[in-house]
Image (cartoon, rainbow, N blue to C red; front, side, top):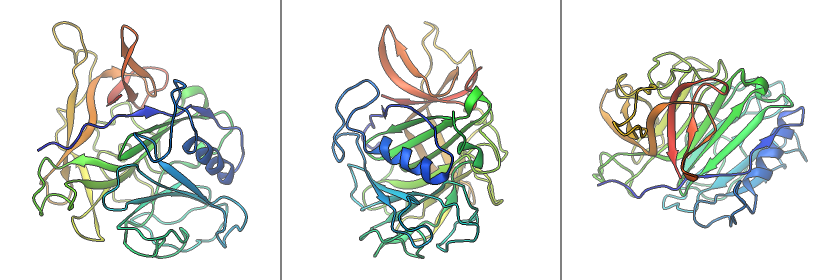
Length: 326
């Protein structure tokens, strides 16, 4: 049986004006702690779609400086904790990594299941209890450039951050949460709450392709690469500390300008995922749909009513589009 519908909301977009990864993390913290959404509707952390985010500025690598933010979703049966981190330190600050290795000035993304109290992201166990996914690289170093635009979307159980480089030359993204609905609550298919938990990113090597839904290259988080810095989509194995790669189920699930109904309305088709190592069905993305080609980080509306927001590899033209429902 399908999981509940998610309601995606847009935080007020920001243009980065700093010069360090610490500045960027502070800006993201400010976005994540906002009391209003982009449409000026109220936002109360811990309720509805609003996450709760805290700052880590006590890390020994750079004491007194923000090197991570850590957050929890409002619906959180497994006490999931998510960390966005990074440092200007040239040498590795420790911690556990998943495929990727540490590099200074790169955003890192990780999650923890059955979490106790947060300690710090450079510990092998960033929380006092639970299972840690290890960190992956979230974006390229070029996101730490003044003038870049950031769009943050959140729902009851997941979040999406999109960075558009100044001038639209590159689109990068990271996501985390209960993004995959296994369409089954059987013990072999889902965690005890019926969900699968994931982290995914466009990686540190390149930006999103305009054909990121169908590509089998390293420029799409929907086909997880195996090389350091590739795009990644990792999901916790059910009941375990280990993770596994996900991939798009079929290349036919791609957008195009003709992906419309006879009436002209865009088609909204659930996007299907496999486990990359076995080829077995993993589930479908939650309240996220393949639709006709479009431009990234825009609101899709009909006669003034917002129906969702977009992710594509293009900020200036048109590319394969994933729409997350309002």
